[in-house]
Image (tube, rainbow, N blue to C red):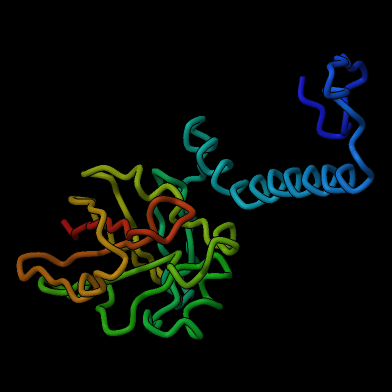
Length: 222
């Protein structure tokens, strides 16, 4: 068994050769270095657990079917909310957020909210319109991953799954029809429109916990 707290084992086998001892007691400096290394290693494990606990919790709830169902919104609530019952995602949608200005969107994403991209359409605007909603972004950094977990399970959505955008007493239903992974620099996707559909595009970073690529989920009004 590994022993991270002892520099040398309880029992040692010392072989004596002509050149001297094959094994000898480490110096004080080496002992200090060993304990410092052990501390860093254990801190790394603890930080990893801390960072990815929200993801592990979300996956556990999803796999054990204990995900929350969609929540009711007060009739007089003027804000927009996003609800994805299959993956238990629920968040207020902050409107008209500049996706190119991190000083604006980072404080929003750090509150575990999702943002509606400035310049894209609102729901129920008709064919040829697109609503673009994004969560975790490359500028957030790895240490902010746990603060923006709304879209952790976005990749589990399949064609035919339901997404709701709610506002006051109205609920706009969208049906997932496509999903793709694109490069981190492919920002032109934010201007995508389909003249035959009213669409909703959901974006997060991919793989989970990194900023290497972008996962886009496309849904349309029936």
